[in-house]
Amino acid sequence: MSNQDNIIDVVRQALTARGLSPEIIQNTQFHVKRAVMELQRRQVLPPVSWEFIVEDQKDERRNGKGELMYYYIKLPEDFAELSELFVDGKDPYHYTSHINYLSKSRAEACAGSSGVFSIEKLNLENGTLPVFVMPMDPFPEDDRHVKITYFADGSMTDYDWLRPEHWEAVISQVEYFLGITRQDVAADRAFEAANRWKNARGNQYVNRTMLRIKNNRLFGK
Image 1 (cartoon, rainbow, N blue to C red):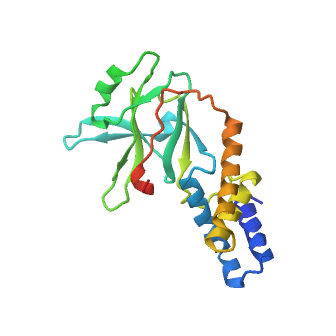
Image 2: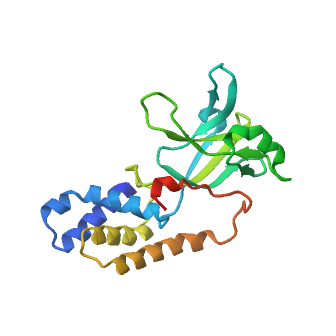
Image 3: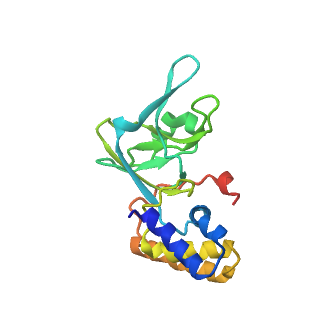
């Protein structure tokens, strides 16, 4: 049984024990998704990791004349905020908000930096929703191993990364949405879950110079 099956089953059992109607119990998967999206929005749940070899994810953007503008990595569909970018064998990359001036920003990067990166939302194809991309300059060599740790927006249905220590926060959030748990109780469970993974990670970050990037427009903060 996957962790996704586990969390949905655990919440279903919790709601059943509360004596809720069969109609609500049948919608457990929806309630779990809604709760996870809210907890991720508030960064209660830990970030997830995505690892790959550069050549497998490398793409390029060109202007109307066909000239190369930059190479980029298309970020996962549920990407919301970057926690860490790690390129094996490289010094840290530094963030710049000036995506159209990557080369100039690269020249201004501080000592010990491998280069610069940015994050932008682009319409890669007509008629499709915009997606997050990560341009980098200089772009890592094709054989480099990359690990991106990011906060997901909770929109995906794969909850395999959820661990048992997160379950109470999800259960309480579902119960709060359904009006059977007080807001302060749900908030306490969320606080406990957030503290657990943050304390386990510690306060020392590998890359203190790298900014954590947030798209405030997504969440209305």
